[in-house]
Length: 296
Ligand code: NAD
Image (tube, rainbow, N blue to C red; front, side):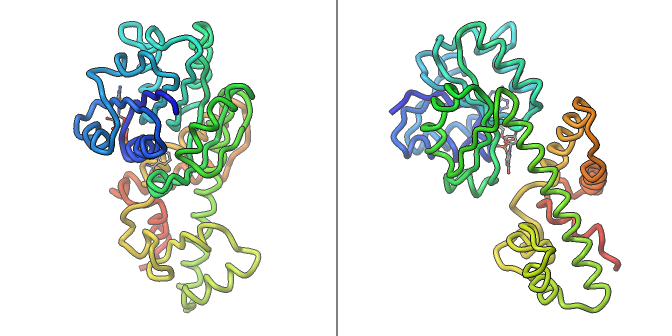
């Protein structure tokens, strides 16, 4: 079992840290929110007064923070960056969804101190974090991937080696850009059927057994009351927030610009999700975009 420092105990990081404790690891946790810390300490984690104190003596440091600027500051800040306190040979696993450029910058700075690093963003949402069934998309060397794998297995079901540093973040934005486009296409097709008198359950069944079949239609249907236990049938509460999808699409556009790629569907999806968030839907599930195509 390993000594692990875990920084960032929000909606995702909290349950991920709890699963590491349940797997028998020694986990020292830190978050700016005392309440978030208390929740994980309750199940057996320890805590210290700062992130710096937590990482001392740790074999692994895991972070689950909101955005690139937080990851940059936590590791590289001149005044209190963890880079000056993590021991050589330690593996840093950053599971935040951030821009690949920041992941590569942190990886390079840590490597100069003989500290290993992988970017390991996740898919699977809060439900996957609680159940320990997340998918991890890992960027780093083969050696770093092998070092990370046994730790990630306590929090996830599918662990993929995407490539070198930053590749995990690129895989994550490609996946979420595709997911947003599928959700938009599924929503407009279902609304077209509804506007022409079809029963959405019947239409969903037809399309899911035909060439229009896809995850947003078959597993996460955006039309209320077609499926039970999906956010659409619960007033779009829970699930994956519009604000987070808008953030990920912003990262996809930055990635597209950096490589001068053509991503017209992603660009349209980013605009539609930004508009949807600006209309007061930011905290709803991303399948609520279905209502954008509502005729009434
Ligand atoms: P969150 O806002 O619930 O949690 C972030 C936590 O980081 C907060 O508890 C905050 O207090 C803490 N934090 C911020 N700065 C800190 C610092 N300097 N030191 C210590 N703690 C600090 O966010 P979340 O939903 O847990 O998401 C975390 C990351 O995972 C994001 O990058 C997000 O895009 C990604 N993600 C989220 C989901 C999801 O469904 N929520 C799914 C996949 C990926």
